[in-house]
Length: 627
Image (cartoon, rainbow, N blue to C red):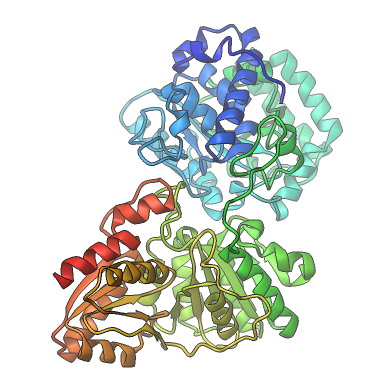
């Protein structure tokens, strides 16, 4: 990376400072801003490539619009680092995603410039329309801009927002479609093909650029140009009225890295007070060659050398749970032609790309559309296949009705692999998988499993694809416990069958999932101090619970701790306590997990400690109960 001096970066502490720069200075400011993001993300990892691709667009929006009076809504928020730096958080940016630091996503409580919180896809248009309508009802003159990527535009909520806002001619809303042909992985679906056809219509775009260069600084003429262009467009480009059919004035495409052109166009569009969409073409990872060359890998690359682009490896040698899933799925699919894989735009994130490369005809990336992923899986199951649908825990929340109505109610054999279960770390509250144990356990016909290590994940997946009913397996982000799993023969895990890992006499600890490894360490610490003996039960299943195991614990122990990497309200600890009460066991239970709160961001170790169920927290609770 070629370094330049920061002549302008530290002169801009707010959008008002940015407006003091001449337009001719903006390209230099963008280069400095991009360099600063690269340097900081190399030391403190985050979502790099998306933010690099949106630098000029962000600068232009804040230069033209009167934020925060005018509202700016980001979709997902992966591309909002430049926005945070411009809006007074430059000196806080080194704390990005760290415990006690700023969030990696827009957050209303963090800044008045964050008009709406984000973290999940496809919400920006609906939120922006709500903000625009609120301003209208309050008699205020406030423009609203929503920035949405082409990947997020595949989400059904984006089209619902377009459909509703487009019917309201008074809504002063600008949707900016940031088109880089990427979500996290390569964008898929019919919309991608449509946008490509629009982008490659040379005759239409050549004519349009000439007209825009003449009329962009004269809004009335620009509106006439737009109306005329709609008729011309039909002759030059078939099927080009997708957005116009939803009553959004369509403008574009323009180069999203030409800052001076962006300023001119946004200035012209600002005074067109009706629903409008600007189609901007950008490059994910722009300005940093390694990120441009491998955009998916550099979406969130971890630590790296900014000069060479060398990515610094993780210190642990254990396999990631997602890779255990990906390799196991391929092994199972080779042995059973009924097995198919479904993912909503996360093939590399969940490692379904392993099977995709080997069996592309049996894997489906459906775009950022979790509800569709689930109902599509239900249809496959109804047609005689056994779908394995992998969705991150926090994203599965968006498909809950589909799980209940389309899968569970019909008792269809769909296996849900719930990646990123529990506290995920630096992505924070929008991405923690805190609720899945609860929201799946209350659904009839659903089996809810959680492996303690890599070997259990492999065996549970084998069991699930041979079970003729809905089955969910949840596991955390990151690396496993180091258990041997490759090459092992598969073993079936009977539903609702836990195991005793260690016997004891004074106290029992009941765990579900990978937090069992924390409990094992806690037991070693407590027993090392002498004089006590602690038993450890691995429940394995939140539903059905192993009642034989619970009866054994209830009869033998007066003091019991439950541990889960999820919310306590309605969780496994409550279910265990209710069972003991119903059976009349004289047991004192302490449940450890996530309290009634949205947990912020930090490293996983920091967050486990904050919630009190890391090894130290479990050991502390055991000592208190034994005392």
